Image (cartoon, rainbow over all chains, first blue to last red; front, side, top):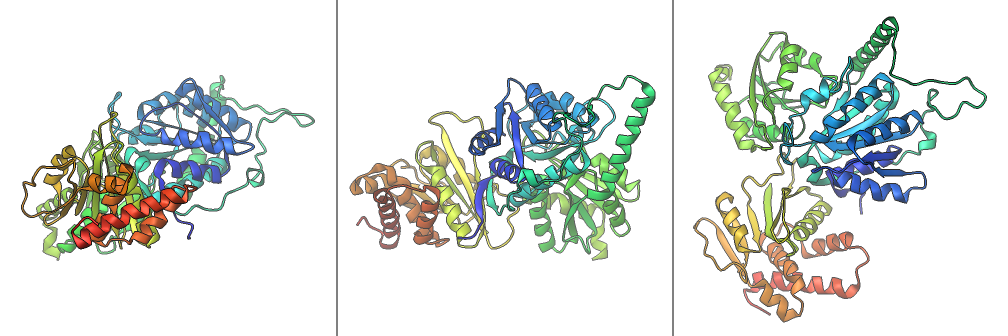
Length: 360
Length: 182
């Protein structure tokens, strides 16, 4: 029997986290992500050095993660949209203190309590920092079961490498859906690169301090610029995309996560009708792969942003293009997953309205 | 690419049917997605899942227009008949679904699965009878693959229970192939 397993998305994230050497998980229940903490409770119990805590609140959970990270553990928490809002203070503290952590947001319909259906309404919150202060969070946007595993591994790597919180932006559909997955071999936490900054007892060495309180404005400004330089390095190093049928495209759909899967179906149908359409899927939402889009705009004059919200990544596409191409939008907020047919109709309507068929 | 919906009451083994089928198709080397319905569900309410099986990458796992539906109760027929793909097939647990189809482009296959299960002596294998019938009708996988998938999922079950499930699958398939109760 091959190594392929059919697994629910939320459990894929959990298994991949354990295999990445995550040994600390704290969380608080909220639908539709509960299968992840449920999985972690069992998986951590089976490990000699694993810790699972169902905290008394989202705030407590993110701050427990902060503490575990300070002590050197690969630490993770997860929640769903309203719960992620509650964790934002802690995420800001993680960013300020330059502490690695992985946060999983299984997005649901909002604002407010909203509903428990899949949505992409938290794009702004995720990519703009989310909490207070001048910071960014690395945001990874998986679209397939296999990618949930691969990007979870990467999330822990990036968090440690750049000493910064990383968010995995999933949604209610990914967490429930089962797809075949092949996991990478497990990492042994004791063999991970050492962290020469952790608070693990000074003994003979000089003491270390990790804090986010910097009262002197001159020192705070220097810290802000230091973080900014780090974010510039991250932007250069990890931006990632997937393209589909984009080589000769006259019209490029820009979509991420579940929306990108639906878009692919729509694009395939549009191609069968002879329309030159392709997909650009940002795999990293922050850093946003703006240079790839800018490069495409040399030959593509029409970009079609599709999101399961009312238009958020749309802003980043426009900023990337600097007015060089036309940008169009199709959105389905509130927890609706449209059909590929709907997207192919939207594509063909736009295609003929923009007279792109004249180039065929 | 073929989309199949399994739907019925919670407790009828609807999600299990879909899960076993999905694992079997994966081991056959096909691309597959399994999407359970997920909402504010209630005890005794409806349960359903959508399985997409394909030789190519699967884009949307949602049951926008299923090719096949395995319907275990009447509410599920009302819910899915309207969205079936043109020319699709509906396998009905006729002990719970006595309603006629309103669409004439669909093929209705009626299986008195509970009667058959009682005859074998255990009503709990109703879902395996339906699954056997589904496999025989669609040929999307084999009964052996289904059995392998089942063994993989319910590790450590006693041989007697596995034999009973196999019997359910076989009898369900035979009902389709021979059109009669054995």
